[in-house]
Length: 162
Figure 1 (cartoon, rainbow, N blue to C red):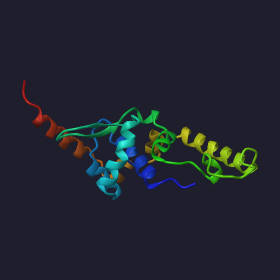
Figure 2 (cartoon, helix red, strand yellow; figure 1 turned 120 degrees about the horizontal axis):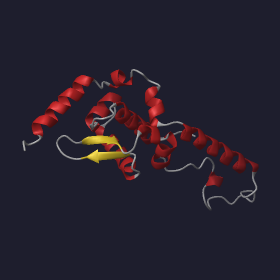
Figure 3 (tube, rainbow, N blue to C red; figure 1 turned 180 degrees about the horizontal axis):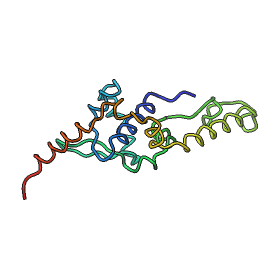
Figure 4 (cartoon, rainbow, N blue to C red; figure 1 turned 90 degrees about the horizontal axis):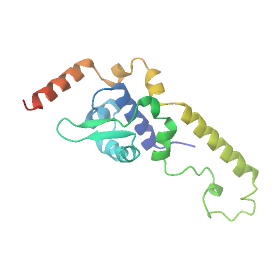
């Protein structure tokens, strides 16, 4: 089984947001950090938002942030919303095979067991686990405190005085 680029970059986007905790992340910054197109990330953003894994904030100072704590987003959560199919063989597809052994095949049973084990392992790891495994993740992604201070300064100047 091979995960799609969509899943790969969905996980990366969530990791970026987790590393940038407490601040809004902007798609152009995430795209630059990973060397991928902004359009591709915007497409990935849709299923992540629909599933509640990320929230978007519109406007001039808008961006994206995690929809729930990084400790509460498992890799399985991401995979199930970004992958289209988990059919490892044609016998996994409903009505697509005419094999007389489809309901009692040892291969079908073994593949289902393997797929469930794969899902179980993914469920054990959170986005937080991936971020904490890389102590220098902010540096590697180009996220600095200077960026945060500059963003806060821009936001402070854009808020009208009461």
